[in-house]
Image (tube, rainbow, N blue to C red; front, side, top):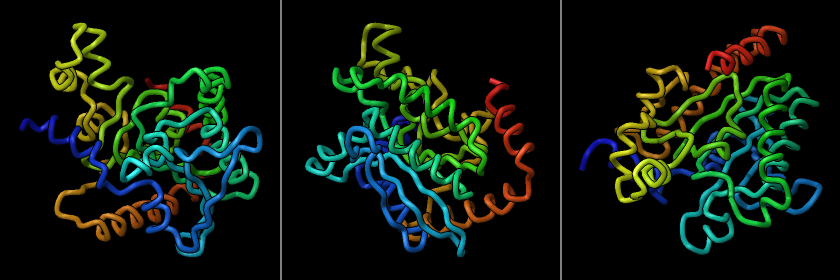
Length: 256
């Protein structure tokens, strides 16, 4: 098994820690909030409020299931527009009350169904990109599995974008890339080699700011490591003036 195949298999592994695992394992007294106040609650997006070393933090994530029934409820981690609107509602609430935001991302992409498109999937994603670029609180985004296309980017316009070591982040799945380029989805792993979608490759190109090691850690140790990284980084971001925070965020994405 080549390295890229191993990483993709690990990124898609159902046994990986989910967004809810991180939210409940890192933040004390985590309370989940529901609904977009417009249509319905979307099980593919989780969000709520917890505390980190006594500081209130808003947590948002894209949630995959651990089994078939859970995945059906979570729509296999593919959010509908109401999921992105729910996330935005919670992030705007965080801005209102001065809470930093941490997002955990694991999705193959936004759900492309007819109903989702009718309810404005593209607009919901674009609205998140626009609003997150100007939120007046620190934002940390962490890719914890798959980071697929605009569906992932809609929660990743952040001051710091990190990846777990065995995660991937791309504009398109390797299968989609191979289907477009060669009309042959079976060449997905060959496409993945060309796409440079692994954490260390993206760190080298400056797309992400940090890679959090996973090898040799059990789940509790990984949660503790991520918790320490978040705590340290939020302390650093809190030292920046509002003007500097927003300018740095703008320049971070402008450079692409």
